[in-house]
Image 1 (cartoon, rainbow, N blue to C red):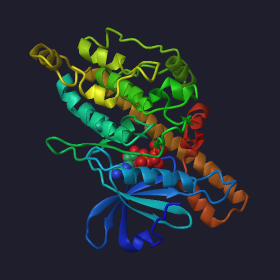
Image 2: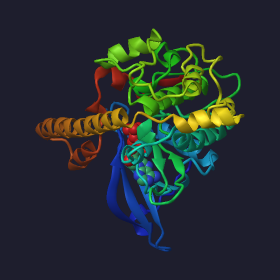
Image 3: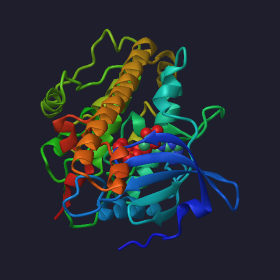
Length: 361
Ligand code: ATP
């Protein structure tokens, strides 16, 4: 069992503004009192009892912490410290000020494939490193790809949220139903044994969106999206990919493969000619091709709208839940814990795909 510090986190850190929220708690800016250094604090509510619907299993938090402790890379969010109280665990993590990569890109007027590749390469470097440590992230999506500092001339990519990550042990099979419908690989939906190749599928989806502003498998509902993935129902619609190089399409096609063993690894991606051109002609093609900025901006605006919608409906559900709690005369403490729980924000299918449903055998 992992040992976390039992000091009161507020004695050592001043707690500041909310930076973001997840399913199981909030991320806030914190300042180390002894040094004045700013960090981020990820406050995760723990389940209070076996039957409790709210909060996370301690084991699940331990897993996230152990994985983060094993990873030290420029493109992966760093973990500094962990504190535990009766009701929550606080992860002190590197403060990432630059926001999401997709928001940063959406603010631009135009972007060539070469410029987009600068970011993609860093994602691949981070993923290649974690895979070399046998860690799969299993929730790679735009929300989890941030930038260190968007004012910097060359900001660093930071991969965040290792809540669904898994460290593979040789000879041990791992299955999980975790993930976000748009980005998950077919083997996850089919509940087959997984490998780090599931992350490579997600990178294929992210690249497809980045270039076209279209989500390759997106259906009207989550169920439809999942069906499209299993049926490998995607194409490069000429209208949206008119400015995309053939090398970029080749790159995506080598990731969106049903057979996980055939997908490119992150290492292989880094030497694909689209990422690392071998000839001047390849380089020139990349410079001439650009991302479909008009549609990308639309995609991003819709994505942000959906995120806020989910947040508002989560608040509404929590208000209702609080009412129920009140009528049942639950303790005041329990009520406070309801506030940051967002288990109910997703549809049935999506909520099926949370981190609780993973298993090793
Ligand atoms: P999920 O519900 O997606 O599993 P989670 O509870 O695991 O989320 P995170 O995704 O890690 O939480 O963080 C929630 C949000 O907080 C992020 O989307 C991001 O906006 C913000 N955030 C997370 N980590 C940091 C950080 N190190 N620095 C700044 N902001 C952060």
